Image 1 (cartoon, one colour):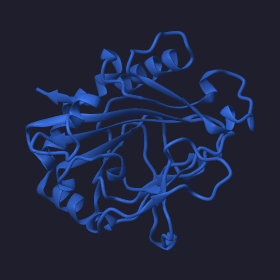
Image 2 (tube, helix red, strand yellow; image 1 turned 135 degrees about the vertical axis):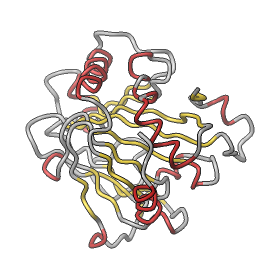
Image 3 (cartoon, one colour; image 1 turned 60 degrees about the horizontal axis):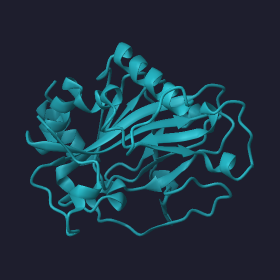
Length: 252
């Protein structure tokens, strides 16, 4: 599914593009089943895979009834053939290539689990904070809703057009409970924020400088999503051998 000229123009103007139904419910159910098996301990993770537990659980501020309810995120699933199928979804790749070209790499993968009853907020931030690859215009993030996402369960929020500025300073938010690595930008005008409700299978493509984040899950069910980042093969990093220390996979 190549993006239309109108969709591409919208992406570059706003810094993001919402595409409905890009990944099928059947495929998402398979990814979710694999995540549950890994997060609950029923399946063994690959050596490079990381499973992050929520800070409230780690610090004893909450006691979830299951191991699954304690997990905030699973990351680096490049070596898991089942989950990595997401990064190879044909419609997803066609959309990404419409924005950054044919020769691409996947440079990060995440399965995000937002259980009810925990804080779980992700402060407003820019993903380029986590990447040394440049130029920024040659990277793109994709975030697909495995379950419906709205303000009640902590959907994504964005600041349209914020990708047109540079990389801003990030720091630890002044919150009681913040998950590891969840840095945020200070002094943001929240009146510019726009929430992005999404149905199952909807995908947000977004620029790495777009300011975005998510809120608490105030509902009674899990809010789950699967995500990846891609870079054009022409990207470069000032860090020597950066690709050797990161899950960098060329897409055929």
